[in-house]
Length: 384
Image 1 (spheres, rainbow, N blue to C red):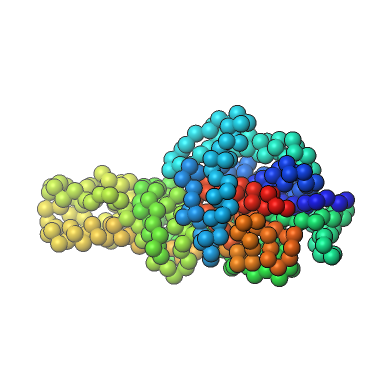
Image 2 (spheres, rainbow, N blue to C red):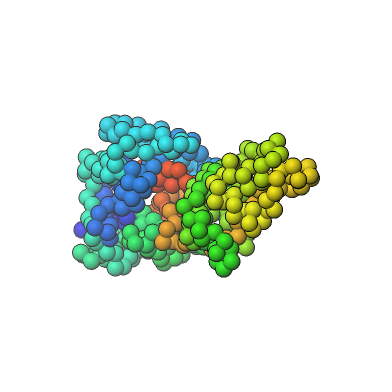
């Protein structure tokens, strides 16, 4: 079959691009290897989809070229997507830090995108594997498990490597390399960190304990909760900082953000004072392994200052991450130097576009990655 625009990938970016292009009168087909569209949308936010963030801005993204995302984000903002959500009567709420979630179900976001595609005349084909992609003169020829497709424009919206059990693959990177594009090395982002050896033994029985911290690494810092797990640490603060951390980097947390230990409790032991500002089990473990617990009156002012410094610069001895299996996003991807920041089109191959997570643009936790999907999909959809 022949169409104007062939989109590979029926995730958020692909569906956004499809409806925008089809509303311009383009004949659009979407091919998806999975058995349903929007799988990552469906599982996100605990099934309620953190679909955008009120405070989304270019500063919330990582890329080798931090300026690349600015154009697309400026032309399709969080307010534009919120307007679509409201048009479809989807009730939502702000959870924290600008994060917007559906009141009911993430299925509503997928249905909204599919309804928009249907209204614009988009054809969506599920359970269809791509076997081969070729470039013939001014069009792309795509052999699939259900036959051959031809299109003037080809959009790669296949996502990254995170959460392979949902069908994530490196297909998009393979296509990019086939057509001569460089790939910024990929790694797991927004991912729990793991400990080994004695460090892991020291925290194994703390699994389930959480507390607010400020996590710091390589000049970045995030204040939110840290959670001890059976393998290391997780929680929003750790997931955020994980995108800035690599093995060997110095990672520290402030266990008392915005506070210090109360030295006025002169007759109380240090572990007692600590247990009033952090979980008791953690306070006891810190005193067992790093600090001498004795009545507060027995510490000199200099010793108390050292204790405060220790607690506010606590090292996190991470050795690795849980990898793509639990990572929310993939860092790295198709090098933005070879893409137009306005249209997402390849500078090497006319008519070839890359959008969403497959590109070297990665957002912070909290709806920013979905906003990049909507914005980059819209940018390509306006011109394909």
